[in-house]
Amino acid sequence: MNILFLMTDQHRVDTLGCYGNPHVDTPHLDRLAATGTRFDRFYTPTAICTPARASLLTGQAPFRHRLLANHERNVGYLEDLRDDVFTFPEALAARGYQLGLYGKWHGGTLRNAASYGFEGPDLAGWHNPVDHPDYLAHLDAKGLPPYRISDPVRGVSPNGNPGNLLAARLHQPVEATFEHYLADRAIAQLERYAAGESPFFLATHFFGPHLPYLLPDAYYDRYDPELVDLPPSVAETFEGKPPVQRNYSAHWAFDTLPIETTRKLIAVYWGYVSLIDEQIGRILDRLDELGLAGDTSVFFTADHGEFTGAHRLHDKGPAMYEDIYRIPGIVRVPGRAPQVREEFATLTDCTATILDLAGCDTAPAVDSRSLLPLVDGGRPDWPRELLAEFHGHHFPYPQRMIRDDRYKLVVNPESVNELYDLRADPHELVNRYTDAELRPVRVRLVQRLYHLLRERGDNFYHWMTPMYEIGDLDHDPTLSAFEPSG
Image (tube, rainbow, N blue to C red; front, top):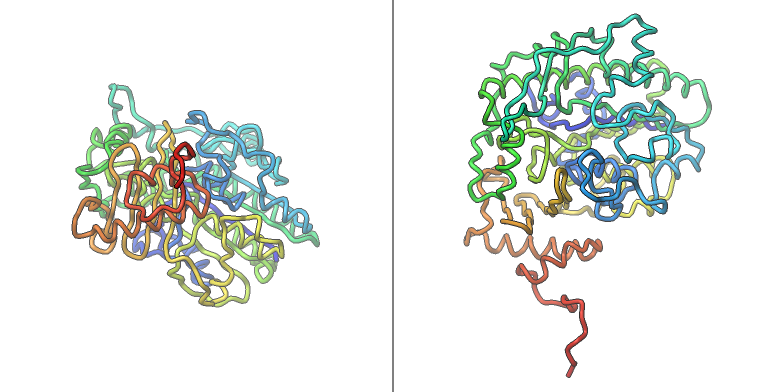
């Protein structure tokens, strides 16, 4: 079974037609969803690029693989995976797979995609590397103009300096965009693989729709801002929330921009999504034309979401809201009937699924479960809750989260914990952690999270042992043996 893995970066699930957006044109991803399995509750293990991508590579939770931060903002964590960590490409290579990866790597500083056996240009960093020699050669060969932007959109940082770049107009035709270039390169590799006899794993990792949104006019202005309904959580007051969220809002200078600019930024983000959808459509069309669709499983997902103004925030950060943790998840396996699944599934589960499709042992992907029993339409015993974690970005900031069908608990050791009733408050505006009415829910989720962390071997549970109502102890939490027994 060949495998085509399509991935975007910082992609809100609510920008896709197949996930309910009535305005954004995403016909190619909608078609993929209509012919495959769409997971309605698909999540990232952590809402930050490098750790999430490392979880995909290894099938391990971040606390286990320990690649916990993007190197650009690294504050002392590992910057590459350890030598002894299992990765899925080594298992596929042992089965005779050809391996290709075109696009964003962002998986370490000393090792690149080639270190793990992937063919393709070395595209390092978090944003489109528009000065990369392969991209420049591509433009030159096609007589296309170089990258140039104007009309930057920025707020004002707390210290009065210009804020982070959020968007700008790109003065290139669509054929010259980095997104079109990636699709060109992926299609050329697909054609090479089609001419061979070995199975292939081909990944195309787009750098967008991650901010800044740098788009040609046709996409920058594609959607009328009047179509945009602002996220209800733009009414965020941060009352009863961890103070770091207010600080992050200031860091992203949300309140220094007019609300009309926020609406325009969302419309531009939609344009970015449509641009990428069109490039994905080109790859999928070529897959069909080459006669490979019947022998190729296709994945589409993202590393994490983006705020785009929700909770008066941009980008991502130390806040475990649905906006950045819930992501698109589509898997199309030839011969399987189209469906929508409601079970909790994660980006990490893609690892065991890839291994399963390739006939490899899934056991080394220790925190991953193959999605094939769900894709096959079965009703397997499946977890009824979801765990996620965060370790920091600009600074260390440990968080753990558990959510079930209705409630979400977030443990923030440095300030206040969070509890949301997602049925009554889907936009997570009201922290009900201290509500007496929800005490039974709080205790249940605290205890469940505690025991799941202990089962995993995630030592975060040590903080929870003396601090919360975790139930009867079956061990010495002081890690000492000073007191006499009997």
